[in-house]
Amino acid sequence: MTLRNVLAASVICFGVFGYGQKIWTLQECVDYAAKSNLQVIQNSYNKKVQESNLTIAKKEYLPNVSGSISNTATFGQSQDVFGVSQRNDNFNNNANVGANILVYNNGRLEKNIRKVQFDVEASQFDVETVQNNISLQIAQQYLSILLNKEIVKISQSALQNAQKLRDRAKITTDVGTTAQTILAEADAALAREKQNLKVAEVNRDRSRFALAQLLILTDYKEFDVADVPILFDPQAPDLGVEQVLDKAYGNQPQIKAAESRIKSSEAQTEVVKTAFWPTITANAGVGSFYFNSLATNTVGINPDGTPIKEHGFFQQYKDNFGQQVGISANIPIFNKGITKLQVEQSKINQDIAKNNLDQQKLDVKQNVQKAAFDADANYQTFLTSVEAEKSTKLALDFAEKSYEAGRTSIYDLNIARNNYANAQGSVAQAKFNYLFSQKLLDFYSGIPLSL
Image 1: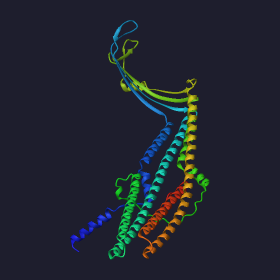
Image 2: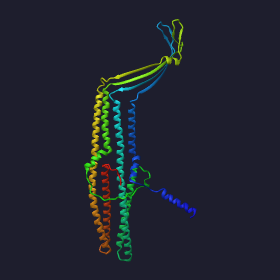
Image 3: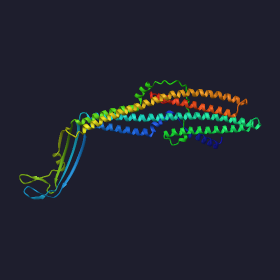
Image 4: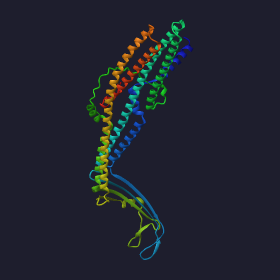
């Protein structure tokens, strides 16, 4: 093989394998959406905010420490008690460091931490709720793609049969054993099957496009899902709705989030009640100052009449250094009844949180009941569809034999084939509908989504 041929083969292989279409499994779709979906990301940010609030609440146990430095210069005349005027130009410098810490407020800090911890829990369950909702949408769309792929196969098979029938009609018409109308009808049937195949392919591509949009993929044309072999042996659904509900109430994150928010609202009420109690704060501080008389550079006169010279900056800071400690109590007496009203508002928020829990449970209950109803209905539909498929297949076999024997027309044969293709599509539709209903019940029972 020449070098040119080797290079050409390499380019072809790279084009085939290097830029092949990405095939996604259901688990890959779910995992990808759990990280990249914008709603998931938004709720993850909300969780980070609550975690930051928890860190802040814990740091409230630490003391507040602050320092201050001030410099003041004054210029001008002043008079003493005898009315003697003199220059009053001086410079002052002060430096202080102080700290205060909450000693007692009926456990406000601890209660606030407990409240924020429940908020963090709720935000985590919110993330899981969004992930679950996205996962269900992905699973439904994934099954829709598999269904449409199966319908494409049915349409391809119908097209092949129509092509064979047309080829045979062409031969028999050319030799004069059948009329021209037979060939015309065969051509029309072939055109209809081509149209049906194109519609099926468009529906398949549309369902792939919908899933790609759900995953927020930019290059949806290179997106496809793995052809999962569906081992389908449907059994009558065990409609233990109450058992599924009991499990769903314990594992669904939207219910856990609502329960955490009830605890948060109860903890918030306890935080508000601490305003009825005194607040005791301890404080301590150190500081010093420096003074300089710019006009005289003295601070006074000795009894013997000699002036008292100012000390230097560092000496004054050493001599004037002082400390202070203290404790203070703020006792609430009357604040216009605002604290009482705030407690009442907090209790209303508790009722709102409890009502939200009831609403979440009702939503889950209705979803489980609907899934159970759909599972039973889809199972019955599947059974009748299978019977219809068997009957139409038998009718098609008789129609083909009758047509070959010349006892029936090509029109009757085409009708029988159309009926069989429609029956096959109905079986596929019922199969995937039942499969999704069953997977939905498994999901509410705590079983992860899988195919």
